[in-house]
Image (cartoon, rainbow, N blue to C red; front, side, top):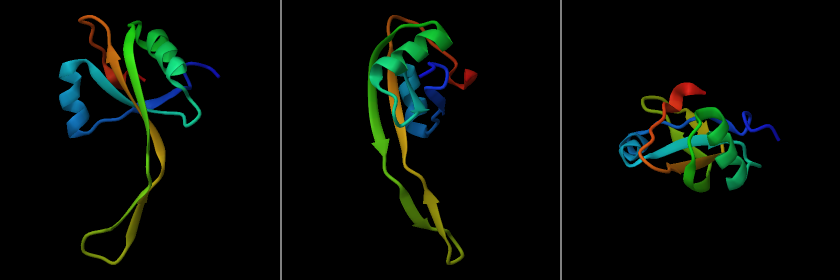
Length: 95
C-alpha cells in the first residue's frame, strides 16, 4: 500500500483542536491501514516522527434532522490519533 494513500484527510472537531496543543493530531485513515503504515505516512508527508498512534473504528450514526422528518446517516470510518515526538508541530490540512 502506498503511504500517501494511507491518510485520507484530517479530522477536525472541537476536541481534536484542543488536543493539537498537546501534540496530538486526528486523521481519517483507510480501514485496512495499521499503526506502522500510519507512522510511515506521517513521516513521509510531514517529515516528523510519530511517538504513538491510536486507532479506532467510529461506528455509523443515524440521527433525525431538525425541523423535518428525514434521517441523516454518517458512514463507518477509521480514525487515528497521532502523538508527535519532541516539540514539533504540523499543519494537519496539508494533505
